Length: 172
Image (cartoon, rainbow, N blue to C red; front, side):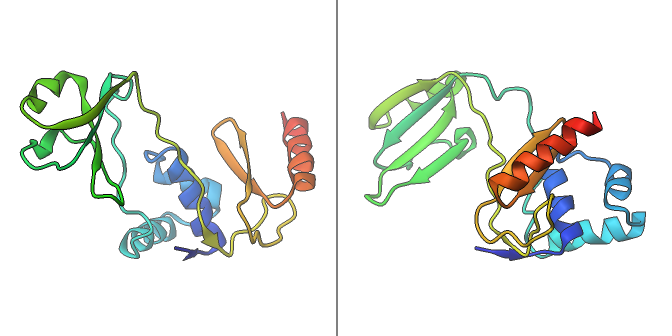
């Protein structure tokens, strides 16, 4: 699925992917728009379904998880399931907190693994109309990413990547 966004909407989305708790005042100064415009942009991203949720992290992301492969999730308390991946063959791979393992008693399980933690990746965005943060050209493929502190930049090629890194170093 590709999403058509304006340049400022895309930058707002990048900021929120890095930190969903970014204050509107910070967005206003970074984007160079008024507070009302920033609020309208955010409301538009939510209304259009581009932003589906703001993920809450509770500090339990590094708690052990059970990764369980099973034929069916019937009989399992749905409140303990963190992730449910339904595979092509109809089986499920679910993740549940290790502390809730006793709730799986009596469930027919194919395989169980214990995970020592989970990391959420911001992933790549498949967005039409984004521009290189160095040269300004439209990026037609997966962009290269450069992280500088809390900022995330997208560039179209290795040449722009090298030049943007030099520019960022010179600004420090």
